[in-house]
Length: 216
Image (cartoon, rainbow, N blue to C red; front, side, top):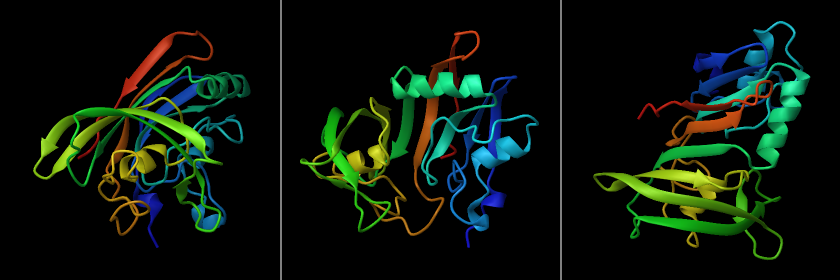
């Protein structure tokens, strides 16, 4: 079994209301089912902060995605931040390495997709019943036969960037190490990193931006 206890979170900022961290690939954002899946960013924050609310998570990263998250320590902060994410008032950037090099230098992807109920947690393209995911992307480097890409998601759908990269109606090239939509063979291999997050502090309304570069 993959031992998440050996994975780390880096605390980038903390005050009485919020904690901003960067997590390793392979660590859950919130606890899963069963005691063996309790270890997560959310459980670690709750267990190490006296008086923290029961569920501090206000948004999630896939287990295999590394990078920046903000969590709330108080109920009022949780409500404020949740509304910011819901109303798309936050700004996010992700960095990824693709298995190949796109023909175009940049692009805009709009794809309707939904959960494949017969093959969870896969997401599938569905024009009739899917919900639109929107992503802007651009190549920021070429490393041999692979492209380093900057993603700017305009929506926050589950597996959005992974589907938009891999699907033929998107970029058509999977992210390196993706065990669901590419050629990854296990946890912790996905080269997808949440490198920048901007939001308003829930108490002061100050705009806050945090960056954390990928380890690869």
